[in-house]
Each structure stands twice: as C-alpha cells, then as structure tokens.
Image 1 (tube, rainbow, N blue to C red):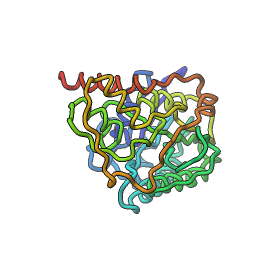
Image 2 (cartoon, rainbow, N blue to C red; image 1 turned 90 degrees about the vertical axis):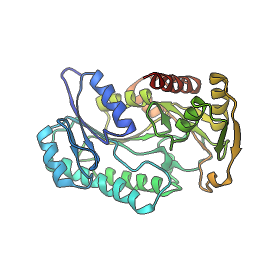
Image 3 (tube, rainbow, N blue to C red; image 1 turned 45 degrees about the vertical axis):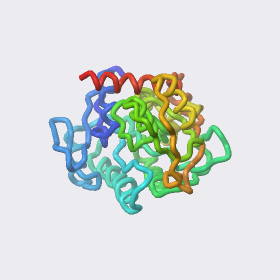
Length: 303
C-alpha cells in the first residue's frame, strides 16, 4: 500500500476478527470494527446489531473506510435454524444496504462464507466451481448469503472467501481441533469424541489473516475464493501428533451421540484460485499447527 488504508471489520471482537485486527495494524492499516450489541462501543468500534442498517450506515459515513471485511456471523454448525438465516443472510443484506447508503468509495469488500457449503463430496480437493451440497442450516444460510452477495457484484468490489477449517490461540473449544489441543495440554485422562475418520483441511489463524490482508490488497473482485491449504488431517492423525508432541496418551472413547448423520467425512480445498489471486502461500503443516497451539497455551499458563 502506498498510503494508509482504513478498514472496517465486522465481528472484530470474534476469534478471527481479533487476530485480523492485529495483523492489519502491524501492516499499518487504520482498523475500525463492528462489535455485537452486548459489547460496549469504543473510539474505533460501534456496538450494533448487524441488522440495524440505519445506525451502521451513519457510522460508516463518518468512518469512511476504504476496505471492509465482513466476518460477523453465527458460526457454529449446530443450533436452531432461524437465527442462522436472520443473522447470516438478512444481516449481510442489511450491511450491504448500509454500505450503499453511506456512499463509500470502497477499494474492496471481502465477505466470509464457509467451505461447509460444499457438503459431502466424492472429489478431492474441492474447487470453487464444485456444485454446493450444504447439509445443515449453517451451511445453507451461508450459501443463501452468497446468493444475496452476488446481487451486489456489479455495485461493489466484492470477493467472497470460503474458509476451510482453521484454528489458533483463543479459539473456543466448541471447535474440534481447539478442543483436542486443550484436552492434551490439560493432560485429561479421557477424551470422548465422535467419528475419528473425519478429516479437515486445517490452517493456522496467522495464515488465514494473511490471506484476508492479501485479498483486501488484490485487484480481484466479483469472485469466490477458497481459503485452504490443499491438505487435510483426520482426527485420528491429529491425536497421534498430539501424543507425540506432549507425551500424553489419553484413553479415547467414542460416543455415537457425537456422530451426526450429516457429518461431512472429508473436506479438502483446492487453493489454486487463491494462489492466482494473492500469490504463493506457505501454510503450516498439521504438526506445526498443533505445536504452535500447545506453545500458545503454555505461554498463557505462565501469565
């Protein structure tokens, strides 16, 4: 960037938003953000419901961002159906309307979707042109959100990102790989899990935030891009890595209640289009990801 750019991150108080804020600040960006209505506003954040378009439009007109990253969403796969559509679909439409009313001169708007929209696929790795087969309300809501966003491709410089699984310090243990690392770090004697054959294209949070920055700085728009490494790790393989790294060997129990009928067994992304958009990438291997997570927990324990 030749001059400082000003970015608004929706969901800046979430796991990804917190890490992305630090990434962009280190790179010299002016960072502002939207936080949830239960979080107090600050000099650089607005506390608002994503669907409160009038309030957000007024704030955006004051901040005058050059770039926006839309991360705010309900992100857990399991939950009541209606909130997924209320927040992920209607909230995104309200944000787009607010951006239009604020009359901004945006260089880029990056909207976070999800690789969950692909569903269970026989092909691997999965490219962006593979027909979606969403298998839960979270994924269906993200696909519906994409349909809404496409209607704005001719009005705003939009890139839609489909992140595959990723993890890092501060992620809730409601997410599987954070749960595994946390349990090994605490040296829990027993882990109760579901299908150990499930495999996911797994990235580290620093890789993901670097990709978001590069997408913001890219000249591409009106596209959908996977955020992925191109390789997957199964739960069984992750357990082996954690045993090796910690010397801990808990008893693994499987619970049929944790095995959902619509679970996607293998989800691996094709990063070719991403590399074409942002250049060469160097994602961490699964072992390095597990090691970095354990080191972060060690550092937190020493504080």
